[in-house]
Structure formats: C-alpha cells, structure tokens
Length: 361
Ligand code: PMP
Image (cartoon, rainbow, N blue to C red; front, side, top):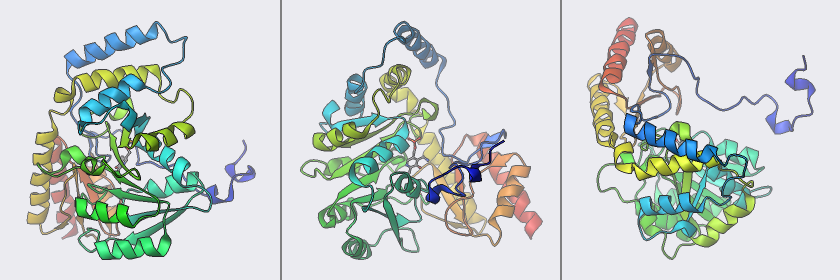
C-alpha cells in the first residue's frame, strides 16, 4: 500500500488531516450545532415526491445556475432581494470557497478575528491565499479600533467575520460591519450561519447591503433550518458580486436532487424553523446551568454555548463521551462547546457533566 508521504503532495498539505469533528455513534450528539429536530412525516413525503419527480430526468444535467432555488432563497431572506442577489452552493463552506477563489488567491490576504470558525484557515490554504487573524477582546467581541488597525496593517483582500461567531456565540453589532466595509480595500463577508438563533430583534447585515457592493452576507440551511444533510449554503450580495462567484463555480455544482429538496424545505420554512425558539430556550437554560455550576460561559446568540475553563479540557470531553454525550473540543485552550439539543439531551449532558466534575473534585 502506498503511504501518503510517498506521494508528491503540495508541501503545505504534508501532515494535514481532513477537517471534521469526530462522527461517533453516540446517543447524545451535541457537537456540530445541528438542529436535533428532523422533518415531519408530511415534509418527508413532499421530499420523497420531489425526488421521484427529479429522478425522471436524472439523465440530464441540473439547472446550472439554480435560478429557481436562488429565487426561493431570496424570497426567504426578504430585504427586497432577488435571485440575482443570491448565490447557493453545497453548504456555506462551498460558498466561502467560491468567495476566496474569486477574491483571494496567491499573493492575497484573508483577515479574520480569532477565536473563530476553524474552517477559515482551510479555505485560505485550499485557495493558496494568505490568512491572518487578530485577537478578539476577552469577552470575544471585536474592538472597532483594533479591527481598523488590523485592516490598515494587513490591507486584506477578504475580511471574514462571523455573527453570531462560532465557537463563542458572540453577535457583531452592525456599526462594526459598517466600519470594516468602509475601511477595507477588499470584500467583507459576514458569516451569519447562526443568525436565526440570535435574540429577537438582532439585526442582520442584510440590512447593510444596499449601496455596499463589496459586502456579502452568508447563510446556511444546516443549522436553524434543520437541513444539514441536504447541504445547502447561500450568500446575498450585489449581483456583480454574485457574478464573480458564478465565474469560479464548477458547472452543475448543485445537483438536481439538492435543488429540488432544498426548494421543498424552503416551501415549508415555518415548519423547518419551528424548533428555533425551543433551541434558544435550551441554549439559555444550559448557559444558566453552567454559570450556576461556577463555570465561565460566553454570552451566546447561537445554538451552542462555549464554557470553561478546564485545566484538562480533553479529560472533561472524554469523561462526557464515556457517559454517551459527545460535545466539541474547540476554541481557546480550556474551553468546550456544547450545542443546544432536545430537553432529554440537555438533561443527559448536565447529568454527565455533574458526574465528570464530581470525579474531579
Ligand atoms: N460558518 C460557520 C460559522 C459554521 O459554524 C459552519 C458550520 N459549522 C459553516 C459556516 C458551514 O456550514 P455548512 O457548510 O453546513 O453550510
């Protein structure tokens, strides 16, 4: 058998591991911020019917620019957006890769503010782009003056900011986004993967799009929309920005099945999003429980909570796993992240953590 080391791999890939949280067959999975509530039988039946319809034409390529789906996504977003303002791909990971393929690349720089989503450096690596991070404040917010100084220093081609941020849950005020766009020589992407979980009334950067052609807002159907397995991410921006992404996409990147099933999910948006309120409550309850247990808890507007700090976080993570509860070992040293789940899952988590911490005492 050939070992990887024997192949003429790009030097920057030597020793790299494929990205991904452990996918373990565990009863309670609170590690990748999924929505724990699946679709109803009625939606499952509609999905099956849509797939049957599409199957008749699977000998043909799909609609290359997914215009109907993009129109549905625009209608879901509102803000006067149309299909021309929206781009879609297989998860927002692929959308972001398109952004970097179009606007970053060799000799260009991507800037973000750490701790943040751990795929950003991988998008940069895979598009041969430079990647620079500047630190967030102790409460994980972004200080505007520090951010502007970072932009002045690095002159980035792409700025990636996440609101609410993963893994901290921190929301980003729109004034900061405006300041970043005004100061940036390149494009700014606000990754709003978790926006639907933000406290009621939290504004979206979508509001800022009119008149700002270098700003884009990325979203996903993987989280609040309970559609992680469907793989559908999307982005809203000026039509010219979307045209740039169309240049770098592979032809027929979104399968006919993906497009059809995503359209069914969007037609049932109210139902697909029905658990969001419950998950916000679960988030707030677990945050309060963790704080009551004497732990540090980051203020979260997402469907997860970052908590700590542990001298040996891996031991805590392992102790939970040994009790059938999988969470995520991610973020700054000493912290762990737990996703909001069903009431039963949250009880399993708090009981297991109580046991693990008692063992420690
Ligand atoms: N952005 C953020 C901040 C995320 O946390 C994730 C998923 N963990 C993604 C983007 C990618 O999600 P997807 O590709 O499933 O749309």
